[in-house]
Image 1 (spheres, rainbow, N blue to C red):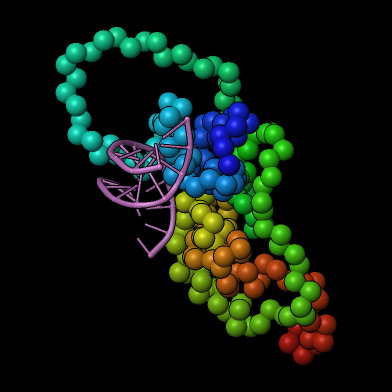
Image 2: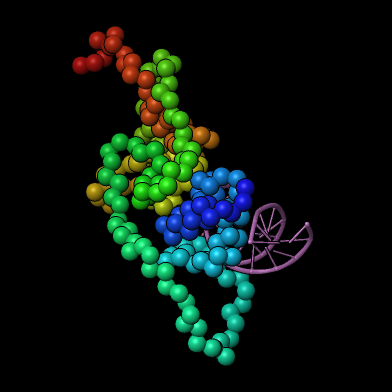
Length: 199
DNA sequence: CCCTGATTCGC
DNA sequence: GCGAATCAGG
C-alpha cells in the first residue's frame, strides 16, 4: 500500500478528528500505526489539539535564536464543528469510538459482522450473575479509553456522571467481554416454559 | 500489559 | 519518502 492522495486525505481527516494512529491504520488498512505516525510527521501535522500521551524525549532545546516563524499556513478549510457527541444510548453501541464521524468518503469500515447467534441458548443464571460481578469489576473507562480490546458495554446513565464503559478485556472480534457478549447477542428465543419462576 | 505518539535510521 | 524498531510516557 502506498500513500495515495485519497489515503493521505483520510489520514489527515482522521488525525484531525483525533483518531489514534492505530485506529487510523486499521481503517486505512495495509499500514501499521507506525506508518501512520511516520506519515503524520512527514506531513508536518504532528501535534493536534490534544495529545494525551506523548512527550518529546529529545531534550528541550534552548530557544536562543528565534527567527520569527509565522509562515505557518493556517489551513482553515474546516470550521470543525466538533460538538460534544452525547452517546445517550441505553443500549450497547457497537463502536462508540467512531460515533463522531462526519460524513466521509465511502471508506471500507471493517466492522464486526456481529451476526445474531442462531444457536439456541438462554441466558444462564450464571451469566446474569456474572454481570453483576463484572460490573463491579468494570474498569470504568471513558469513551476515549475504549479500544478494540476493551469491552464497550455501557454501564450507568449517560446523562449522569455515573456512566462508564465496562472496559474489561474482550475477545478478539467481539466488542464486549465474555459476560456482556453473552447477554448482548441473544437470539430472540426466550424461554417460554418458564411458568413456575416467572411470577 | 494495554495503550499512546515521537524519533531514529536503514531501506 | 517510507515504516519497523525503538523510545518514552500514561
